[in-house]
Amino acid sequence: MRIISQLLVVAALGLAAVPLAARFLPASHPMLDRIGLLHPMAAMGLVPPDRAEAAEGYSPPATPVVAAAAERQVLRDVITAIGSARGVQSVALAPGVSGRLLALKAVPGDGVQAGDLIAELDAEAAQLAVERAELVLADARSTLERVDRLTGSGTATTLQRQDAELALRTAELALQSARRDLADHRLTAPIAGVVGLIEVQVGDLITPSTEVTRIEDRSALIIDFRVPERVAALIRLGDPVQAHAVSAPNRPIEGRITAIDNRVDETSRTLRVQARIDNAGDSLRAGMAFRVALEFTGEEYPAVDPLAIQWGSEGAFVWVIRAGRAVQLPIRILQRNADAVLVETALEPGDLVVTEGVQALRPGAEALVTPGGS
Image 1 (cartoon, rainbow, N blue to C red):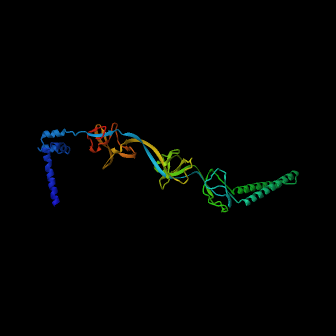
Image 2 (cartoon, rainbow, N blue to C red):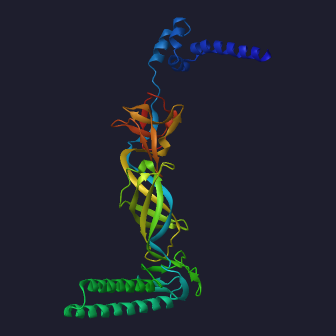
Image 3 (tube, rainbow, N blue to C red):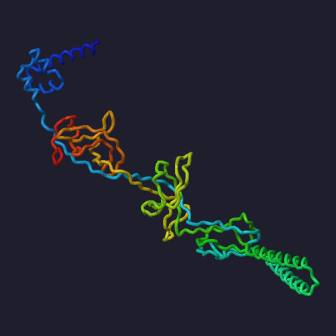
């Protein structure tokens, strides 16, 4: 009850102070006029009519502000992603047949060319098979020549000659197969590149499922990464990218988009993309992680100073000077850069965006644009 009594006393004093201020403090008249109390008080005789008329014509001084026309900048959308690298070509080397490893002709880290020998398997049985096939082929040729002579003298039939020809052709195919089997006992590099770790030792029994080593062509690297589906329609083959190895973030590497998947992943809503970067110095390795950045250029928008942006109950806005008076314009922030903010708003030709003096502005207030701070 005591607090309520005190509040009532304060309210009564306030009500009494307003008429007294209107009567004896002419400086309060502009404020009373703005809140609509001056004329009712003049009608009640609390304010002399001549003072009320003087207050109506009162105009506050123009507010000094710093303002400038908004520049227009292109909206740049930068997408970053993390991807893994692999060699431009990579082949896992395994034998074509089973056998015991006889010799290794390369060591990890060796640079090899296509066709270079990497390893040899014990090929004694395969060599014997080739020699046997050569003997059978020679016998088949002799048989066909003998049948040809007998056919000429009329003592051999056409059927016998056909059988001899079939035997010769079969012997030729058997020799080709034996030679192919012998060649499979030699592991050669199918591509040029660098030999990786060798997982077997001389004397091991290996099979076609045994990976002996991996040859990687790392003269260039392919980075595999994913981008959001919102840029799926913007990305193109040949677009430039900038890559940074996670282990060396201060060394930018230029590259190009080389492959784009034909569909967006329904689970992650991302599109798989591949980019190629050079590795002329051989300082990068397959399997390294890279941060990839792609830049997409959009439309032009007004660029305002970050100091010009204010916030209210309805969101962000800026003050502009239009025909000498302050106007509050709502904005939608599109992109923040180091020195400017790109916004979407209803600017008109000749509008000046206020950067200093915004705290003293009110809608419709007269403003004085000055070259320096207020």
